[in-house]
Length: 154
Image (tube, rainbow, N blue to C red; front, top):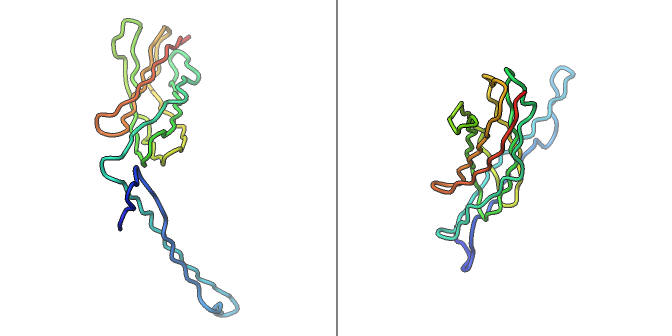
């Protein structure tokens, strides 16, 4: 593959091959038609032009109730110019800033301009009180974005 001069970022395409039989085959009164499709995704990145950028568009605790699992929804938009797999972590801190627990968000696989929403759950539940939730997403090695919010568990 040759990248045109002046290209930057990432490009993606899909190659699809399809075939089907010329005529259906009949066997004991049953007609079977077989069609096949095979696809391959092609991703190309122009070296030293990649911009790994994104924004957290939403970061919200859903139903924070004492003793119940806490679910956190995070929205993400890829504002860069390449495909990314953003890996996220949810940290839970008490009002003194001490870690209470953590869990992971599912990986976000996004193309430039894509927006996704993911959820993470802390199944252990929390006692009533005020907590700080910290969402950290790694877009590429050493490229992090962070969002924080306080919640009151009642």
